[in-house]
Length: 131
Image 1 (tube, rainbow, N blue to C red):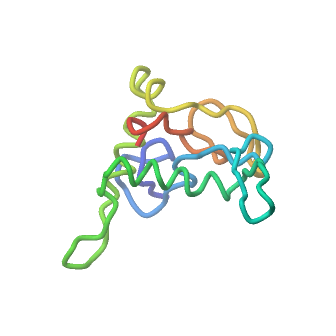
Image 2 (image 1 turned 30 degrees about the vertical axis):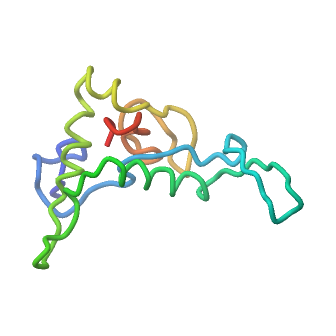
C-alpha cells in the first residue's frame, strides 16, 4: 500500500491513503466551558463535548488564516499543504512540543499514545502556531 506520509508506512507524498484524525481537541463534556443562558432564567451551565471542541478547533484554524487546504479558485482538487505543515512538525523535538500538546490518554476505540495515534492524531494545537 502507498501512503501520503512516511509516518503511515510509505515514502512521503505517495497517495492515496492517510490515517485519521489529523489533530484533536478536548471533547470531554466534564471539562467544558461555562456559558450563561439567558433563556432559562439566567443560569450558568458547563457545556462540553463536540459542541465546544468542533467550533473551538474550527476557530483556531480560521483565525490562523492558513488556506493551504482550499481548492483552487478556478476549481479542481485541493492540495493538502496544511497537512504537510502539520505532519512536518511531528518528528521535530522543538517545533512539535512548542506547537502541539501530545494527548497520551483516552480512547475512541483506539488508545491514545505518544506521538501520532488513531485516537488524537498528532495532538492538540497550542494556539495559532500549532496550525
